[in-house]
Length: 174
Image (tube, rainbow, N blue to C red):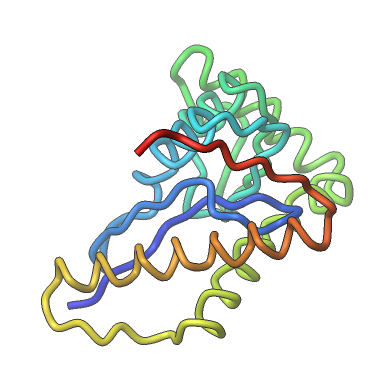
């Protein structure tokens, strides 16, 4: 048994904006909506969302649009216009399908921002190791989440220095 980490991250800083853990055989598609809604709920301004083919569905397109972002999810080789027959989902599906086929180069320019998530996974594995050392499932989940948390702390510190972000930590009474 192994676990899988699903996450969304920023394209400029690679900060993880939301994370979900599943067993290694879980369908990726089911994690798109919770990741997107958590990211949007955290105050992140979404302009575009890039995801791989595992997340392809009219529902995911519609969810992305509802949060004010444009979905860039490539279509599978057997995808067709009119394939989705569920009201607003099918309109979004058809429009994105035609954009994907008629403006492939422009679509791929946006879609390739997805490589940032691969960079984020690489950063986490390079800094904190790719293996989990915990024995129980609960401990493995906690260990994976701790690695993501530590990654975010490193990214915040790096962003403060490299991007000149000013931080003002408020003092609260203990």
